[in-house]
Length: 99
Image 1 (cartoon, helix red, strand yellow):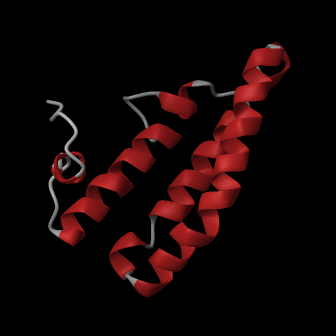
Image 2 (tube, rainbow, N blue to C red):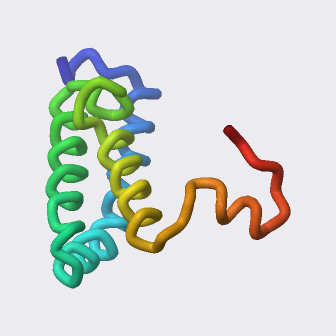
């Protein structure tokens, strides 16, 4: 399936890899310091590997452990750990509340 990637697909995958490489030390460090976050790095890495292997659904699929889904769960878990609601940050900056 990886042979069927278009140049546009390859560009998006390369961008995902670049983002993941930048996020990796932060997410891994968080997991070392706070056990609750320990599994997120492995989940993100696995999703990248599956995308690189040709499984496009692992990029942003909603019904699997895609990169997007794992990142979303990490974000939600961070908000919960900080005692924040999803819209707290936007409200602090005076931005309209999204529902």
